[in-house]
Length: 328
Ligand SMILES: Nc1ncnc2c1ncn2[C@@H]1O[C@H](COP(=O)(O)OP(=O)(O)OP(=O)(O)O)[C@@H](O)[C@H]1O
Ligand SMILES: [Mg+2]
View 1: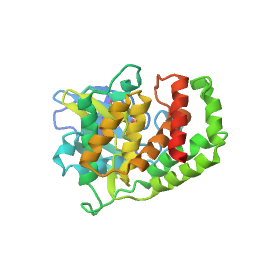
View 2: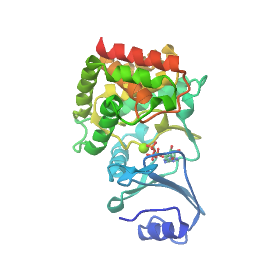
View 3: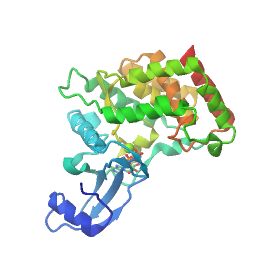
View 4: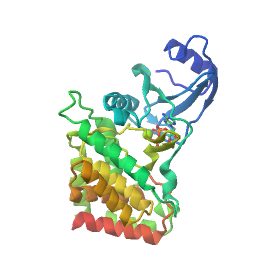
């Protein structure tokens, strides 16, 4: 397996062999397109254009000691291929330019130097209605247009789903999981310990975890949170569907709502989001709020921490509300 690096000479050789550089085209610069943890991602600039190269490896780029499914970028590429047939989805995602299956390398359109929506976790930032509706409409369109009825090939993405399952449903509740939450925010560990000892809660979480692992009827992006939404000059775009699979809409929308809650968005925004989605697609509210609760819990007490700014009191309030949603 060829391991890409950011050396221009090596990249030129590789891209020429793959026919991804045109004749007389040369690389003038290579840059990191934005923050990412999982994969090796580069922006390649030539005299006339730029494009993005993404390679997945059998480990997490930022934490090489952590194993990850090596071929995950191929699942991401399958997603881009599938949505090509739906113009309103295609318009909101980068176009797939090339794929090297042997080396798990994908080349895609450069959406430009935009920023993702991670800034929403900063206190006082409000998600504009226009952006909220763009995100909801994309999800509703995806969920209603790519289904087991329209597709012959179903993406199961089993390995990535197992990895995610571990981090969402198991790891946060394992007693000695090695995370010291007081390092993140003093006082948080005590709250996590309380949840870890709650067998009623854990039984419910196990049920939802089993549901997440079940194959469903509609294609999900699979990682639908502000880090996957990009603000570009061409409007809001959606990237990074490496966790995609055929599952339940309630998981996708629940995860999204959880992030709006942790980004301290008002209940008016949350209600607007649900109402908008339900005007476009089916949703089981009760199940959706359960997945929302699960995502809140795992992001506050699990390993995949977010740059949250909400204070301890607010985090405890969200943990308690989430527990209520799950056990009631
Ligand atoms: N097609 C694109 N056009 C422009 N910028 C992009 C594109 N793809 C990725 N980026 C930028 O590179 C960053 C990392 O990309 P991406 O999220 O796909 O990588 P990742 O390693 O899967 O990240 P994560 O660890 O968050 O899953 C993005 O946040 C974005 O800023
Ligand atoms: Mg990713």
